[in-house]
Length: 179
Image (cartoon, rainbow, N blue to C red; front, top):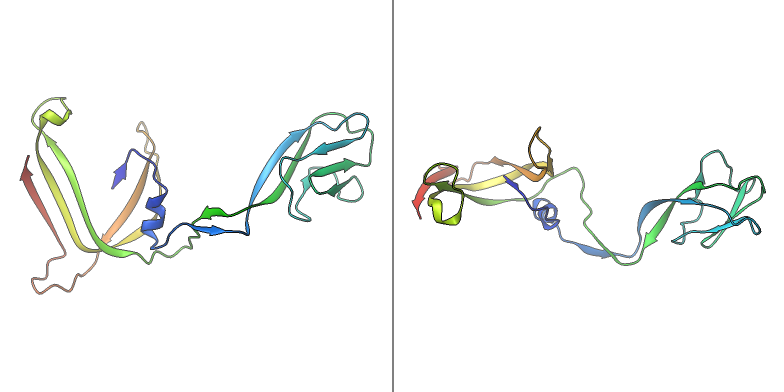
C-alpha cells in the first residue's frame, strides 16, 4: 500500500502505539560558527547535554571549554568557522518510540479506482473500484519510503495476511464495485 502523502500517524498505527510527550528526548545538532576575534567564544543555538560537544580535531578542556550555550576556545589561532556537533534535549517533544518489532494486527481494507478508458484519471472517469479486504493481517515491514527508480518517493507499508480463524476459512476477499 503506498500513498503520495507522508503521514507520521502511519508509523504509530503500524506499531500499535501513539505519539507521547517525552521530557528527556535528545537529538543532535551541528553548527558552523566562527569564534569572536576578541573573546574567542561562540554561542550555540541550544543548550548541549553535558559532555556531548564534539569539535573535530579539538579536545574538550585542552582546546575548548563549555559553559551552558557558550563554547570558549583556549587557542587564539582558531579564527575561521568551526563545525560543532552536540546533543540537546527537546522539552516535551511528541515522539513515537518504535522498536524492531511490529505488534499491530487487524483488518485492512484497500480500495483502488478503475478508470473508464485512456489516460483520463479524473473523478468523472472512475467506473468502479477494486476492493481488497484482509480479515486479519500484520505489518511485516517497518513503514518507510518506496524510492523506486523514476517514481515519486512515497511512504509504504507491507502487510501479510494471517489466518483469520474464520468458519469459512477465508483469509481475504477481492471485490469489484460499480461506481
